[in-house]
Amino acid sequence: MSKMTVPLLDLKGQFATIRAEVMPLIDQVCSSQMFILGEHVRLLEQEVARYCGAAEGIGVSSGTDALLVALMALDIGPGDEVITSPYTFFATAGTIARVGARPVFCDIDPRTFNLSVPRVQEFIERHCTVKDGQLVNARTGGRVRALMPVHLYGQTVDMQPLMQIAREHRLRVIEDAAQAIGTEYLNGARIGSIGDIGCFSFFPSKNLGAFGDAGLCTANDPELAERLRVLRVHGSKPKYFHALIGGNFRLDELQAAVLRVKLKHLDAWTTARQDNAAFYDAQFQSAGVSGQLTTPYAMPGCRHIYNQYIVRVKNRDGLKAHLSERGVGTEIYYPMSLHQQECFKYLGYKTGDFPESEGAAAETLALPIYPELSPEQLAYVAASVAEFYT
Ligand SMILES: *Cc1c(COP(=O)(O)O)cnc(C)c1O
Image 1 (cartoon, rainbow, N blue to C red):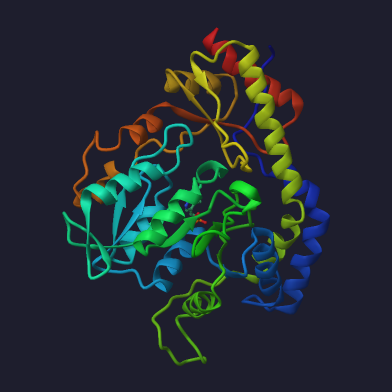
Image 2: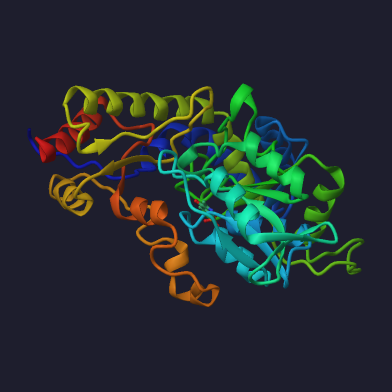
């Protein structure tokens, strides 16, 4: 096998395919000198909302700010607690802490790497009481206000039983859909249309990536959507009058113009990612490495958009070094669970509290999966992985 270079992600190929569509729009926005909350933002909001099956879209400055403004819109703050996954990007729990609330972790399902609904149920049964109709964490005395499921790597959380828990205990649901645009739960229900607020990121490495930072919230309740819209501009409504304290969470017009072009291509890119995943699955199966390598589990009847293709392996660090030596880019998402992070020491968790999350952090590796990979590159990556185990 002669050596090739396959980066984990290369956005230049994608840009080449859309350059002729995008550049005139960038020129048009520059000519208009209307950079803030213009027509492209308004149209993108409608288009993404429609794409996700949600009533409303509110463009914001990043996926992180989408989560932050969602928590603010639901009035979650000091004395409140939000249940989420310890195995996710930092922003999920980081934003909960930033509004003064407490992140409460429940372990993941080792097959999907997503928040385990039975573990959430168990936490509520064993550690919570009900006071004046409000779910309370018995240990801390905090009000449990919301659930923040994360659709990690582009795969849906098991939403039906999670929404059942939310209804039963009057919890709000903020979906961290940063990696899940176009992801579907059962019966074609799109992520962003199921919980109270869906939070999307258009960070360049996401499936729908801007030319910089950008994000969006979806909501079905028009009042909640209006609150998000007002909070996005410092809580100003009418201008210079503030009933709420918001922030500057606006989406740039230039980014919206780029994203509108890219959205039209998203389904084709998703199909290419799914085809790449199916190719790897088949290659690892036929190479006979299934004893040492577990391919990604995809929930039956749901649409996985493969923001990442994650293998679970023995000797992960050895495989990573081998692939690096072969010219194949990989990444570890995420090497340390959030309950073990130094900044969350005050939450009182310790190593061993979430064994599935810690196990995933030790044994998973992301392989290149982006749509523009050539058949030769895909075959090279699969062969390089197989070579390590045979
Ligand atoms: C990318 C990401 C975010 C943050 O999005 P930004 O646009 O980078 O702020 C939040 N949560 C998850 C799970 C992510 O992957």
